[in-house]
Each structure stands twice: as C-alpha cells, then as structure tokens.
Length: 151
Image 1 (tube, one colour):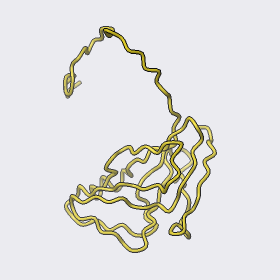
Image 2 (tube, rainbow, N blue to C red):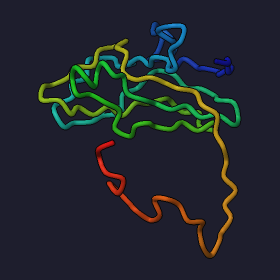
Image 3 (cartoon, one colour):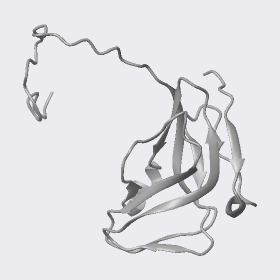
Image 4 (cartoon, helix red, strand yellow):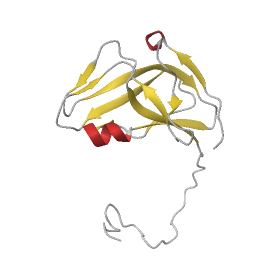
C-alpha cells in the first residue's frame, strides 16, 4: 500500500470527533464518523444524509469511495444507499453519507458512530473513441443475468 496525502478540514460540528482512521494496518477503508448533534433515527425503509463534520481536498487523479460497513449491513440491514458513493477530487464540501435502513427495526445513529468507510483510489480517465462496430466477445450483447447464477 502507498500513502496519499489528503488535506482534511474539520468543520465546526465535527469538533471533538476523530478524523477518518484505519482500524487495522491492512484496512483498505478509513472509518467515517457521524457528526450529528442529536441522535438520528432511521425507520425501516428510510434514508438520510448523515454529516461527517469534515471536508477534504483530494489530490488530482484520485477519488474517495464511500462504502458501507459490513457490520452495520449484516447486523442491522443499514447500508450506503449509493454504494459506493464517489467524491471527486475537485469537491470541497462536507462529506455526507447517505444511509438507508433496509432492516425491520428502527436504527439509531449517535454522534461519533462509525457509519461508513472511505477508500482513496486512483482514477483512470477514458479517451472515448466512437466506432461503427465493436469486437466480438464470448458474452456478446448478453445482458442482466445472461451468465447465469451457478458455476
């Protein structure tokens, strides 16, 4: 793994909360914390943008991917609605996490709760080249489900 310097600005409602941090030495994602002033309750089926209290400046050529935490998904049915959410290098606003409750019970989000992971990744920019036809492939134009569900 290589380190990428990311400038992070703590916003007023993020004071007292930790900056994104990796839980283990080999973790790919840094934990994002909820910067809510009061507990937020997500009813089953409800979704809401949860503030993190930080803004950042990613280096050009990188993105940040907001991903779910597996424990929240497995234990409570709570996940990131637009997973993965992409934060572009030129965005300077607050990092928000769109959480949705797919579970059957209310889910309470408290201040400082670990709500998502942030993965920093390089970005490749495509050079689009229009063509009148495409090369053949084994799959061809087979769409959703065309490769089956069994090995």
